[in-house]
Length: 193
Ligand code: GRF
Image (cartoon, rainbow, N blue to C red; front, side, top):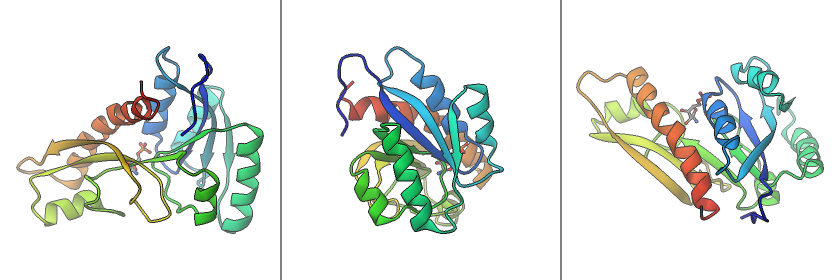
């Protein structure tokens, strides 16, 4: 993991694909004094990602990569990250799978948030599957990214109860509230703060 030196914040890039509520939450967190990170770059694979507005509002540099040619785009992206001295990557609703090679170049420095209690319910449609399986609990997980999907070392998790009459939408809403608390908690934890 990157080391904190004095009160210099760790340069962080956040990768998104959609709404960007976790991104917004991380930006707000980064502006707090106790936060070890600064967010200097937003990456999206989706030009229509709502979260890209945040780049404008908070004056953060943004780049769009469609990853149609993954190898080429990742190569360009790695160059940018290197030039910006990015030392941490936070995936926040990023729907593309990064290559083994890319992950290796940022070994131990890529985090992801996933809306389930990993190792259960890796992949998509987690809340739907949780309901079909009549689970009593679900939740969210922040973990290090490894080359296997949703399988890297778990940093923190938060459990929530499934209620009678729950739908995937209702669960997603409650889980998202917890995600917003959990991501900053995970970042503080990896820097021993
Ligand atoms: C979150 O539920 C996250 O766990 C999942 O995608 C969703 C992204 O939400 N991977 P947002 O774009 O941060 O609002």
